Image 1 (cartoon, rainbow, N blue to C red):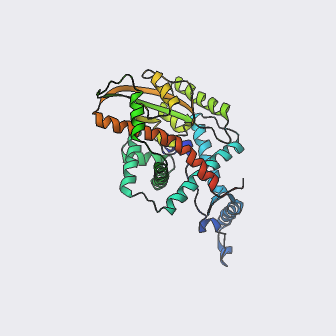
Image 2: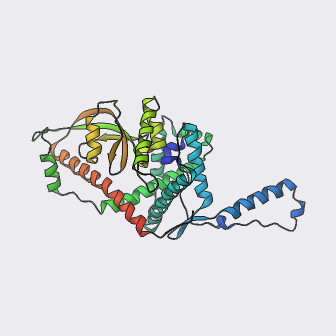
Length: 346
């Protein structure tokens, strides 16, 4: 079981960090080196060679991404794709995609550091328990499983902590850019003919999805083909959660196997909502195009939720906010990428 897919989309392990002293380490031999067995000299020589071959593949503001970090991520992607039967683009194209994701992560983590954001251990442990439960495990079982995959629990905790820091940055920035007025709420309510005035019910849909984004190295046809590939695997009986963790670029939901929880009208972008509304429970959609890329959607169940008029208005307000925030996030990420100093050295 490739537990790593539960934690990060595209199975990427380490975030880009600033150049550490360890990255500059060189091999030093003492005057007593002649007494060391030949095998130790050989190991040291190989280590020195690897260190000498390491290089900076990207400068991101005041941080760097090393070739060894990029190679580690690519190796993990290839290993997990092979284990799960996934197809990958050519190596040079994959390297560009992986590096671009690392650059975006580094920019957001630098913003978190500048804002002195942090994740306390209680909050982190709660998130780890949630991830374990999504895999039908206790926290101890989850720790055993990741270690069986050759990953330390300390590394997992650090990965999740970074994911949570980036989410904090996104929430802070986007909340300042999105507003919802009373008129927005009234307009939305007036466009719901099926809900009479004073009616205290709202239909919710529990759904999950796989998102394949368009990137500088993945065009329209490639994104759609990848989404169709994921859909075909699902039709052949593959587990949705496993496929979502392998294919989905929506890292937030991919951590939970693509599960979006209960979704209310207006909470998703129109193209997604229209497709989701047309599905019956347990039905799988064709690839659906939105401004975020291609979605493969599955509806799990529906329910009518009893709400008071006051809470209904607040729920509508939150739904509108969430939809606009999702749209604004893409714009904001493009802006911070353009504003950052990034020197790619692949």
